[in-house]
Length: 171
Image (cartoon, rainbow, N blue to C red; front, top):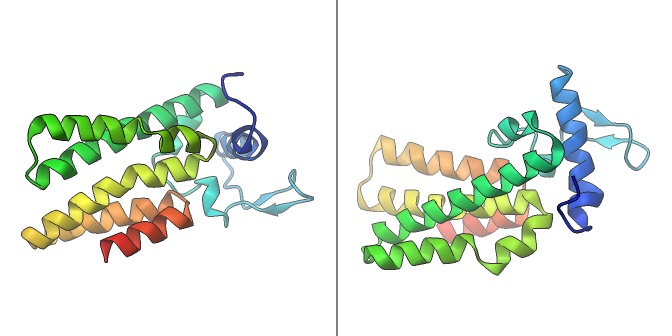
């Protein structure tokens, strides 16, 4: 339970995640958090990842293990997405593998490990760009759905800055 260095992860996101975990496991949808800053809205804050579907399975695990699984899944997802996006651009397989590995193990991910919403949102960026690439080259309902799904996950991940970056990059 002491694997992370102290910063926003332990001071803010850890307690919020623990509160969400306790509320969900007791059958409650957490509208309000009475424990922080004299009480504050909880459900309305997108950084709490309440509506992000890929957060929910990791809530079943203890806090430290759940965060570890959350981060590792998103690192893997980011690398796979970058690999597939680079492949859709026609790059050689070796370049795609290296690109995926470099992206998912980049310093940005390790610096932002203190902000789970940023890591989650950033891992969806290559998937959004892959979906837009497919949509532009072969427009169809299926490719449009994939682009919409990737964009929705980017939004639900809770990082407004990364969401705006994806929106502007997609445009």
